[in-house]
Amino acid sequence: MNTSSANVRNMLRTYGKQLTSAKRLARFRQAMGEAKPPDDIARQAKRRELVQRIAHEVIENLIVNSERSPVVRAVLDQLESEFGGRYVFEYPLDGSDIQIIRETPQGPQEIENSERNKVMRRLWEIALSKVDGTML
View 1: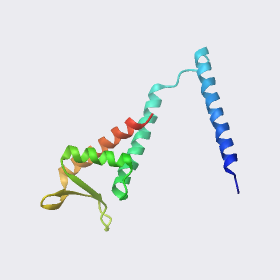
View 2: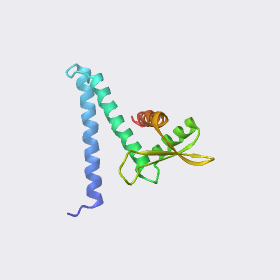
View 3: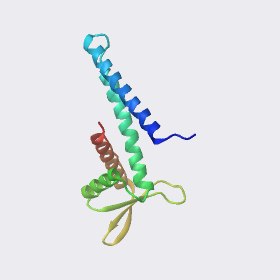
View 4: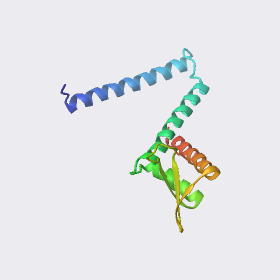
């Protein structure tokens, strides 16, 4: 199926106009008292779920990909500045749990147990805050 770029632009322009009209109509109905305002708690729950899903993808991206996106880089930079060292996250080939390696003057050192849990918890918190801060 061949579609020209002009057809795609027209379709997107029409879709944008429809969205704008729908938003205006919803605001008008709400102002007239016909529609109930959206449930704020449900909206917050959906947002929180979406933020968590995206934060999970950011952390997976941090672990799996060698190329860093700006958000992943910001998360890692904040983590490294808070803990005062450079970290490398990787999955071992044997399929066991993630390894966290900290670069020290004595050489690379694997982090284990409570310190590992502390780093992972803080990594999650930072990812959540960065994603939440960048979402509209």
